[in-house]
Image (cartoon, rainbow, N blue to C red; front, side):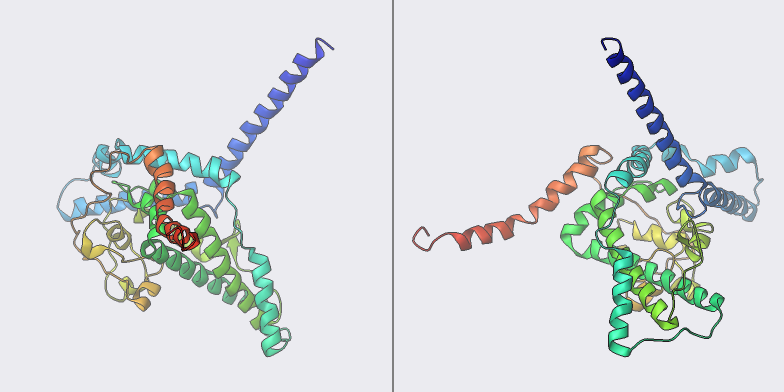
Length: 349
């Protein structure tokens, strides 16, 4: 027994270590090798190729030679790669993928429960619907489009709330503290913001799914890669990564009122007051256009600066994870003071 206990502990440690390593590589696999991932190697590869073509074309227009070394410097400028902001974004990547996403990455609202509730409510109000005659391909296509539009609307609404409600802004401004933009900046989000976002998306997607399935009188699943809407996957594999970048690609005219170009989102990060509270959309600018929050950027690069000046705790654990919780708690102080005053007996006053 004296020799068994240490051996048993060592064996347990080895098993736990192996499980940890397996989990680590499993998370990496989901992040980089799943087509439905928001950060897949395929989507990053396409973004890299488009960026290289963009910088090559810029040099060709100016009559300059296109050299690999020059393109690489343009793609990965030292001022961005070596910045504290970029290093903080790398930290957020590991935190959100390997820590928060596992321990706390769940939504309170049940997608399936709400979806079934919508269908039951529609049946109560309008009666049951028999199975539809359109082919399954049509039903799946319609549901796919509905769920994509629901994702975009949920994204827009969550983003709008995060800017308009002071309590929520305390968490969202972590994302806006980035002083340089790279695809990694997408991970610069506070856990509380992620939790709220997940629940709003669950609600909007469940409503769309319930309405879609009631329309056809039967269950119709969306076209997806790894549970990610196929339309969203296409956008991720085109220009979504470039929205957090230093490439000024602006959609103008009708195109700029339908799609969120990289320049649209870079304007959203601007510290210029004329750009505040504009361009909340993810892939589509339709909701911004509809609700009056659209700013169509100029074709020529606008002068932009990002982040908040005079913040010594920017890009630190205290400034990005702890301070938002403290600042958010401060919003409850006036309410608590009023409650405390209301509970004090009149004689004591």
